[in-house]
Length: 181
Image (cartoon, rainbow, N blue to C red; front, top):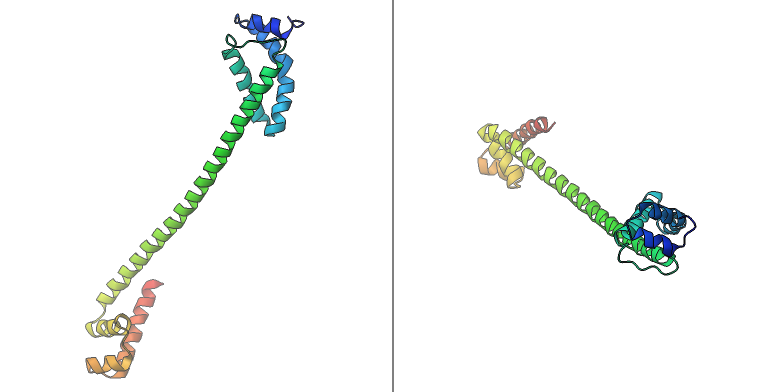
């Protein structure tokens, strides 16, 4: 069988002869391997593509008509498999890039969400601490920071000395600094 032509071998392969198929595989696998490897630059991918070419040949063996040589059919099949591999690879790369962009956006969103949650928690802690302050200190602090009033205006509105306003703002800020540390 080793000396048979491709046509003779393939006629036997059509009758499910696996030995003839092995001979045909041995005859063309090396040259097809080199042809595919030049295009994929990956031994693993080349082996996979080569296997697909011969699997397709086996599955279509009853429908294929071979002239003097199976060589043109095998190279055309290999070329189409390589093109298919390239398209799939390009799609995988694009999909991977999209996943990377999405992951980066998710991380940014997560950080923004975490920042928002932390800011909300901190605001809640500060508000709770302000509520624990004595009435005068709390009133002075709210007028100073919440309504952006100056010391002179706060003293005038609450009918207290400017020094009392300064002292209460200082004590309120000290309480809040301790809370934040």
